[in-house]
Image (cartoon, rainbow, N blue to C red; front, top):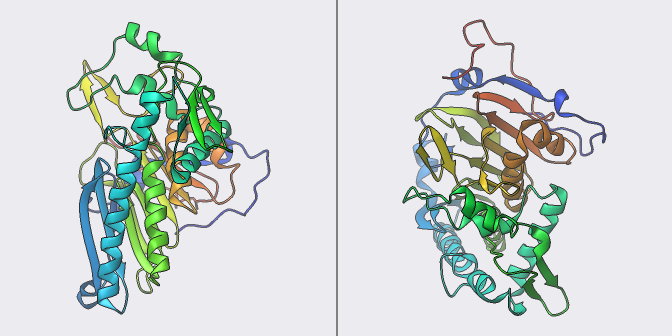
Length: 365
């Protein structure tokens, strides 16, 4: 079980005070079958209760979207899952960098030449992204796309060092100029591109949950790839959310009982390819334009999916020491990190597991 840390932590909290245990310990104690790209939601209920849940799945925003909704009025529950999928498609049309007519694509096409007026929603999310950039010292940076667009993980294509160096100076969130009065976005230089992939899915999950609340629904789960938002519990039981083992299919690193909370996992196993023993994945360090190599998985627990989404990306870039130092300063935020040696680190507010035996005190292979 988890214990939550106090609402406020001393400013002097350090990463060294957080806990680290071998990944094998958590896996051996908690191992279950895992299905899905990033998260497995374990539904531990009777057949009768399961029959009352409305469910839907779809491929949207380049990932798997899943919704599970319960209400005593089955028609209302079904209306809820339809509304969730509609909202996901709407946000995809608005924020996808791959749809030429999306507002985000319009920004990338024109903002270096002229101010681009955007919707209130997109403007607010870009502005919030800038706030996360400041909070993380630039570890979260939506202008990573200035280099990121050169990668194609399906085609196993990556930029060479010269191409990265030519584009790298365009990665800097300060190149994005915002005007609150006229609600426009402008780039300070050419070559800048933005991508909200590190925050948009969390935003979509939060929007979907709010739609369900407005319908009077009190029990639901919405996932968008590695981002999960929970509304209430699962009719008297917590939702049991598993975090995937980053390298072993069919195993998990941890299992968490949650309700009314959000969980976001960023991993190097979602979009990647390997070449000459090197893994090239979609989480780039803004300072190098290259895939981050210190950790393999970061999971963030938080009050909302937007925050959890942005912070999971940020902590992945910052690494174990700096990432945990950040998390331990933030009220209401917890983290679980798996590093490249398959060791598991967790933040101060998560209870330390029992002492491992000699057999389990090893790294996961």
